[in-house]
Length: 234
Image (cartoon, rainbow, N blue to C red; front, side, top):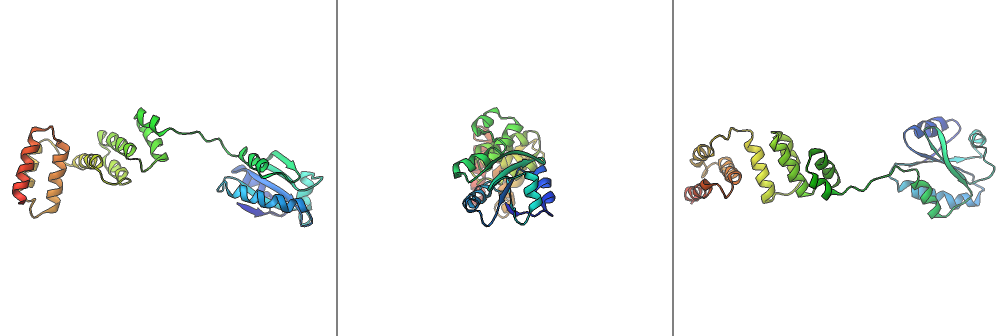
């Protein structure tokens, strides 16, 4: 973000803003050739920070008070401010590489987050961090949803599962989350009750299939109830 600053707006646009974000003050003038070289570089590189650094341009001919405050002997003169104080600065036109490093030093350090490591840890804090990094990662979404279902936070689990396309893994967790809203003491009784309605009631058919998916292929009842469904439908 680039703003033009005057003596009247310096407090608000530079000092106050520097309490929140780093502010680069660029002292320049229309008659200054090197200023015209440096200015576009500063604007380009501060724009690349996506609002993390503010560029305040000060025409010293129009803002003598600001120029005096910085005791600038020559221009271009550039100063970095944070928390109302000058952190760093330079005088004269600089290469893009030098300016880039100058701005980079003002940005907070970012740590590289390894999603695989977070997934391996498997606790909620780690999984949520992984989800922030890769919200469409099916393995992360399913792991977090399973954790939420296990603690009966099924509404949150269903919301998270909406972030990824339906696959067998996702459908299994969705089914488990939905079934948590209904007593599941007896899958057999629920299936028998639904079976009489599956041919004409799509919701009953969906619930029936979800129960079968939750029971899984290792449940001895699953194969029998699948046959019953096929017979009922066809």
